[in-house]
Image (cartoon, rainbow over all chains, first blue to last red; front, top):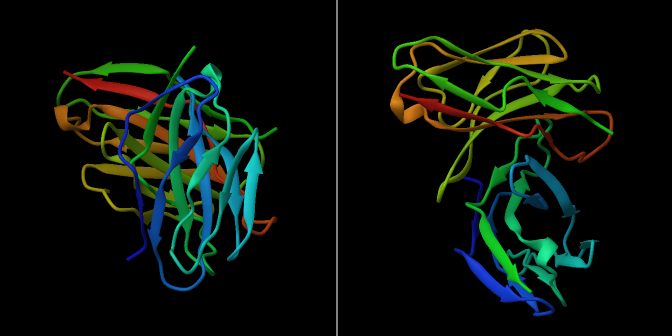
Length: 114
Length: 114
């Protein structure tokens, strides 16, 4: 079945460090891929998305590229800030799905120190 | 902006009680979802609804039921609360008019069953 595997946390970085959070997926067909972020005490919010192979999603300095050949959608940021401290979730929606349910990874806690 | 409102931020209930978690969205979205979030397990889908009076089981429906009598409201019901239902519950909605539109989440209800 459809599933997402993301790297285990927690991840702890100093401010301005480079961030990578790995995400790989299993799906039939051509899924859409998402990264959501959850700040402390809040619900999830969409960070970025990509809907087809080789698409790059980007937002707030974060980027992720949809790699069909490696079934991956790794999240990167060149220089993290303290305000990026949050839990990050990779997710997929099955290709052709009209019901819209998402399959989520287990989440990766990121803590950035000043 | 889409607003998804969960009626309670924190709830404490006793084992065996019937518990109602309410969720309201203001964007006329067709799809609504209930997830629970547990450390190390990520988000797991309990139930979803693709329209009024329609419902589908997710991955972990046991011990839960749902109600969708009006389009804007999706209720999660714990028929007889148990301690293993202590968790964070997240409601989400999605409109069907835009292809690949994201899920919009509420801020969550943290339920403790004692």
